[in-house]
Image 1: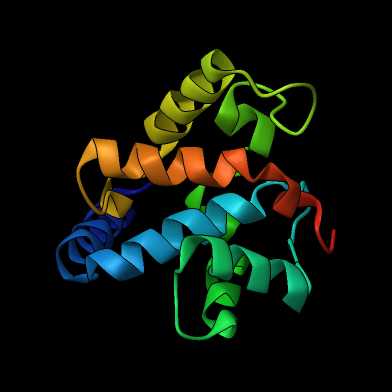
Image 2 (image 1 turned 180 degrees about the vertical axis):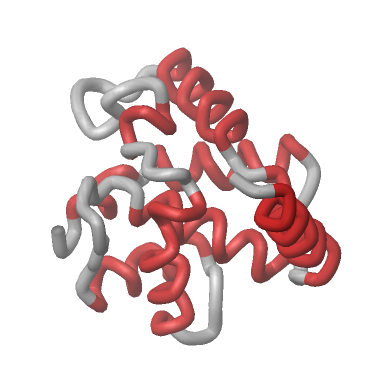
Length: 141
């Protein structure tokens, strides 16, 4: 990557970090993570899946606002799969407290710094809530 590209990337990331509202960062983070369950070049979810995610996490007034983060998921997560991000095949087997804690910590460690929208314990609470309702990951897929 050229010096100019690195500088531009740094400027864009710094700008996003400073100017995106916390609510928007939360929406981008959780919706893009949700989309990482699809191991495809263009993840897509039907409206019922996005609606369930939005109802559970209360991300936006409109479900359609979740579509952009879904399409940016591969970029945001740098092509990592759901299982790579979680460090565990979270859609399989029983969800124990240890698995939940391990996955939450792994997800947060892979989280782009510019998407950190609050205190680490608040982010962890959101991640755990989403993982405890993991059945929504398979709705509409």
